[in-house]
Image 1 (spheres, rainbow, N blue to C red):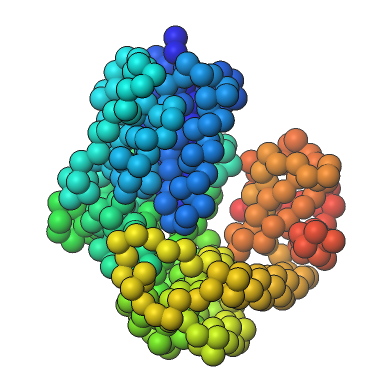
Image 2: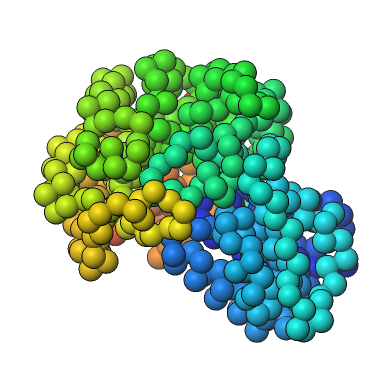
Length: 442
């Protein structure tokens, strides 16, 4: 029985796909092991959002060779679709598979026999236009939480982004198939499902036609028994409709937590980025959410140092974020990507300046997060406890994404409990009442 191991870079979507491909191997009789357990086959699922992701791929290939010099190394993911020939030249790589091929990996590579030492790696990467099939995927690495892919690809040509080139056009599974997957996950005693995709608000495109909507999807999932929580991973502000917000506010299972990409608080920079909204719409979305769910957690994606972002425009963006009623930021430093519009835009922001702006926004994010946490002290919430221990304490997230730390109790793992927020500890985690006061969640 051959052993196979996976290493996944990048987004939660990649993790859900790696998990599904791993189950395909297991169905064929392969044995899934850890990366350092001398596997016969290494599958590296790559990202290519930043330059560092490309470098990480090369490093992991080198590590795989150290672990087992005779191991078969196959590269899949966004980097594999964008630069298959470049990857094929990396010493130790045996095969490169594109977006249309990765879910047929077991079938296409078959015996996983290594080529002679001087032989160039096998490239199985069709043009991205051929990536039209949809493959439902979900992760099962964590018994508490699963990432369920509901959508793939993107039709938005943002100036800085290569994802449409790496994943193809927007496409989705049917609601019926996704509900079936959610029921399968529920049968494994997983309590929380996070909906993931490239542009999940664009859900419903099948065979090039819009057949269903994201609102239809979440209404159907809200009826799935056995899942305590559904969480929406990330949704574009122009696709986060009033109807979606209103439904989440009164739903049985969807939690009060939205992650909404902004990318810049400057309308001029948003225009350079070719984003499909202006900051005024973002203000409306935040206000709508907070009017219906005052304790809702709102996370924001921001890119710093995009070409054309002068220091004055950055300060405009910073001030906009500072005044918004949001809970935390995910800050991304702009990285040049080939074949994108952004590399033609001037002026280019020096990398040192990008780093300084990133630092400022990380500090702002910590302030926002602390303010949000402190606003919850004295209130009650529901924690889903995880099998994760730090300094003798176990951790969990509340429905509105507050990280909670309590004294370790094995009976609490994968359980939801109602608690009262007491105080923040030195690590910035929320402390709650002692365990003998926990009440089961209704």
